[in-house]
Image (cartoon, rainbow, N blue to C red; front, side, top):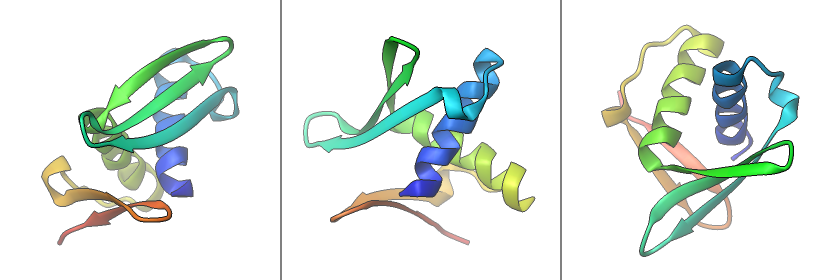
Length: 88
């Protein structure tokens, strides 16, 4: 879960020329909307959908681990915590 949040923070910060520490993220899953994240930057917030989350994870894995993965390889899931499975 922490790495998904880090991925979104790094992605959003990069888009807005901020530090990742300036971004706050709350992950959620709802039957109607699927996986989403509410992102706060300062006093403003916006929502990301599952495709945005997968894009952030894709970029994060490449930056942090040097591995090229594709969104089609990423499966998000939730039980008590959120996690992402990455297929080979």
